[in-house]
Image (cartoon, rainbow, N blue to C red; front, side, top):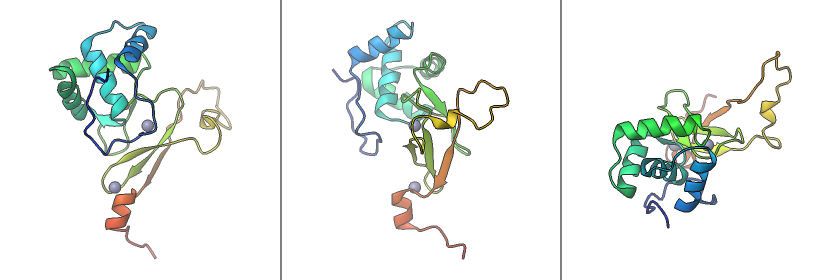
Length: 164
Ligand SMILES: [Zn+2]
Ligand SMILES: [Zn+2]
């Protein structure tokens, strides 16, 4: 059973497996978290709408499975992020976004015009950016790489001004 009915054609990650409620319950339990309806709703919303911001998640969690209060969504986002089930990203000039694709240190490309965000794998192999040329003695757990440019829609409608 799906928690949410998909209506948003702009969602990314169409090739990704969208977990069932049963799988999401397992995900919560494996992380040592109690299964609650707000947690399931928020987790499902972020799985289906990667890089959603808090306001969108509030709307999605409400539409999906009965009302979930703003405060509950904030609390759940914090709990799921600190449990490592969600990753929080915040590109420059953007509000915080959440995604369920965690643990691979993938990067993001952000459109300068409309703010659309897409996933970008590390350019070589699996998470090589976590292996710094010289780690200065730090234990590195995240490398934040943001590519900036123009998404296909925006470059088609208003190409970036030439600097030449
Ligand atoms: Zn754009
Ligand atoms: Zn991402």
